[in-house]
Amino acid sequence: MKLPLLTLCFALLALASCGPDKKTARLSGKIEGLDQAALLIYPADAVEGDGGSLDSIKVNRGSFSYDRPTTVPLLLTLVYPNNSFTTIIAQPGKEVTLSGDANRLKEMEVVGTDENKQFTEFRLSVLKLSEKDAQMRAATYIRTHPKSWTSVALLYHYFDRVASRSEQPTLPLLDLLKKHQPTNQQLAAIDARLRPQVRTAIGGFLPNFTATTLSQQTLRSADFKGQPTLLIFSASWDSHNYYLRQQLRKLKSARGNRLRIINFSLDESQQKAEERAKNDSLQSVVYLKNMLANPLVKTLGLRYPSGNILTNAQGRIIGRDLPTEELADKVNELLH
Image (cartoon, rainbow, N blue to C red; front, side, top):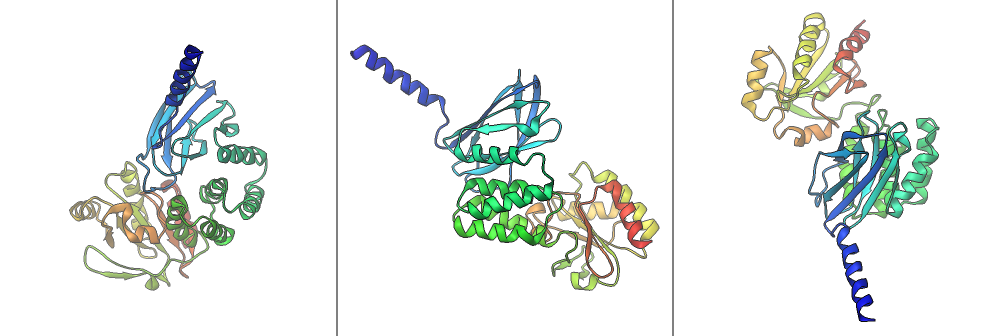
């Protein structure tokens, strides 16, 4: 009897050692039809306790495995080669498994925890619905399950990651979740980022702010009314910067007198910002120290470098984060 018992103990120990430790969240999967590829994975927000950032996962013969160092639960976004994505609830000490087909990536199933299973079931149930109808169902689920991590994932997936954000019902849903999950760090991070983004969405107005240009001119958002204004965020380290510069030159040449253009520099130093302003003949340049961590970046809800905000003469936001190639058309439409 001793030998079988000893063997069983070793087997249990071996099985336990295969799982992630208490400071690691594991993600594994099998995607049929995806032989060799690289998937991107990144957190919804920076959360204290998460030891990772943007990362890549190699797929070999359809299979992959990834360990995320984290001591807190968090939301991860897994991006496939065709740019579709899956939202995952990662928890330290837990493993989640993905399975699906490369031709139907939106139908990817995620299991391993109750929260991921529930989120998957909801996501698959609304696949054929319009964005608005899916949001209505997500809102109902969130209101009836405010203590669930599944609801946090639903808020992120259906109200945060969409192109058209709106204050209603997004912020009331966020407030409800924060009330019932006051220590949830992921919710706090979403709140800090999403609230200003929603309030500076298309149809809203710029928040009040004051900034100083490199030439020591004081700019106040309250003074922007009366003339269409384009706020441009850019950085020399952004690969998109060269094409953006060309478009700005054209806009300034064609519409400079009728359009106020303010350039916000996200360069790593003021010296870099001054050099670029001189080389590109930029005017009204505001240097934002600490780049994307600058408070004004958060106030204006900037999501990435080369972002932009376009307002009409009344100060209402009529476009934001427009692709560079669409900027000129939108400006011409506004000034026509």
